Image (tube, rainbow, N blue to C red; front, side, top):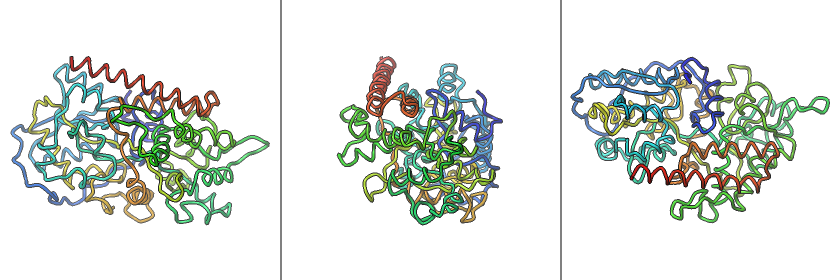
Length: 473
């Protein structure tokens, strides 16, 4: 399916609803890319010799904001290396396109791809390892020069196979209609208008949702809450928080065990889906929380921050706050899906071009060039933290700037990638999303849901092990 001319809102809806498909991580709306900022010298790493080849091929998502960004980076690369990169956008899903191209010998030299979909390529050992050739060559420490969960998405069995350019933007935020909160006289009680970065508890969030719900003649015309879309990241974040007291996570890679069908798993499902439905403040909608919020069908929208950054242009005044605390005063933990970044096929036709481009992406220049996408996003690069001059609107009340500040200061420090070794993240996301929807529809209790979730997670894990066995021979 080509998404070249879709609006970002439509694309997010498609990405969230596609069964088994991955979802777009960034929570910024489509916006004209800002003009390139004055380029600076890379913060680390000396200049490497120019690649021998004078041209290469860059693949990425066939989606206008992405294509604009690829072209901006290709121009930057040409300025730095005199190498021309042909930008060849590809329709979703990119991982299957790359696998087919590798078989046909038509693979690109560089690809922009989400780290969470790389598992089939890791199994086939199809990607170029980058720890020594890129990170060490640039003097870049992946643990300190990048923030959030981005590096985790490109790490496999101790090696690095990509350069992240995004961090998690889903599952950890709640869009709050602040004008409605103020009109109800509740500004001092709930975030973000009370100055707090998180809801104090799920009960607190439910109270506000109930207060903002609208009913006419006994019929709900605006629901208090919707958490549909990016359900799995939200749910697993709650579960991770509950399990942290026992020193375990939703997936134990040492024991090779899922911890979903547990007392904590049931509690997490109650908090996320079952209880708000029983309270009458949430229902299963036929659209994501983004579309529901922007259509005026829900008050609070949990999952993706697009309503806060896109809503102003549509007459809504959503502001972001963090998802509720669970363990008393402790900030909650989150499960991140990271986002997009760049990788290279192991058998690139022009490996010198591949490596030199990826080295450029391990500089502040390269990261800044990407982070201008959607009018400015939360960076993956530590050196850009606190900088907003590359945003299309760098003012303090800019929705993009406000979202970035909340994330960088409060959310990303609490966020880690899913983990490693449990199978296919995209499949687990699909399972989690389907299970949560069934709970909202009343077809499963929380206890039944986590049992089914665990069974299906184990089944995809066993298939993953079989895939590894078949490839390794």
